[in-house]
Amino acid sequence: ATVPVKVTVTGAAGQIGYALLFRIASGQLLGADVPVKLSLLEIPAAVKAAEGTAMELDDCAFPLLSGIEITDDPNVAFDGANVALLVGAMPRKAGMERGDLLGANGGIFGPQGKAINDHAADDIKVLVVGNPANTNALIAQQNAPDVPADRFTAMTRLDHNRALSQLAAKLQVPVTEIKKMTIWGNHSATQYPDLFHAEVGGKIAAEQVDSEWLQGTFIPTVAKRGAAIIEARGASSAASAANAAIDHVYDWVNGTDWTSAAVVSDGSYGVPEGLISSFPVRAQGGKFEIIQGLEIDAFSRERIDASVRELEEERQAVKELGLI
Ligand code: NAX
Image (cartoon, rainbow, N blue to C red; front, side, top):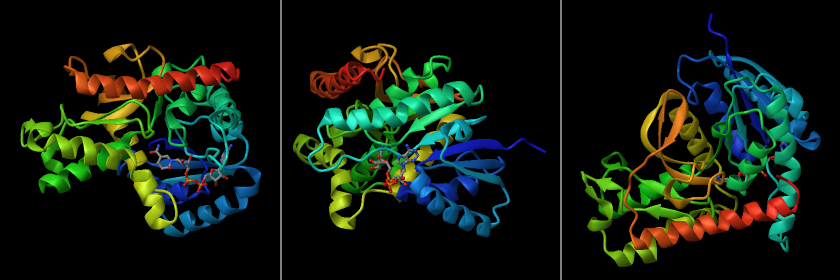
């Protein structure tokens, strides 16, 4: 029998965790023929709730689910982990400064990075979902010096999927007609969804919409979609975020020609080395590669630079806090 893949999910008792765990256990994360065992990491106060979710997972009798472990100890949760989904994070509370937010998250992602460094399997792949996702991923990566840096990624796939959906609705085409969509930069309001490389029916998307819609509607709608969901639903995106996490890891493991993911920069497209920034990527043999050779015009350059500048500021702030 195949050895099950160990998937660790942090913040397992939260709303994204609830939307994510059942899909992992049903085989959608890795493939319909890959057995998994789940490890749920929570803070002590939420362990009981995670146990409740585990009871429901049991009650699904998923054929691929070979076991569930629940713990509040990162050293246990990441022991032998092959895939880690870092969902649990410290949310921004009213009146919180950016430094406070980064500091609180450093207290979570620093120790988790170290636990991954010390205990995870050699093939560990990490996806950070918890916000501020790019910089939380940077903190974890910097605390895991023995793990190849390219195993740490942050999620911009939800932004990517939102961009596909908005463009498909505008042009009244199925989402499957759209190729080469890209989100650049930070998973924040400064992100840049790029229609100058996206193609619809083989033609550049930006040439099929007017520039007023592109600048005045498309970019802000994608970038502020999270806030619009909160406004409508009274709670932040959960099922769509879980769906994007599934897409990100599935494609990373099984391969894709083109998607968006925040990966460690090698200096491509002028993004300073070491920052975890969103790029157009392909995946092959279990590795993401930044797609090279795209021409970046002045309009795109300015927006990529603005988002990357924000990432640099966040990196500087966590450096000053001694978190990396
Ligand atoms: P919830 O507040 O429902 O759940 C978070 C869970 O994390 C809680 O159960 C909490 O106990 C747990 N937790 C906190 N600290 C922990 C620690 N040190 N170790 C283990 N668990 C810990 O939030 P939810 O709606 O599930 O969102 C989770 C994170 O995803 C948030 O940071 C949120 O901002 C972020 N998001 C990221 C998105 C992205 O596209 N990258 C989109 C959706 C979402 O907003």
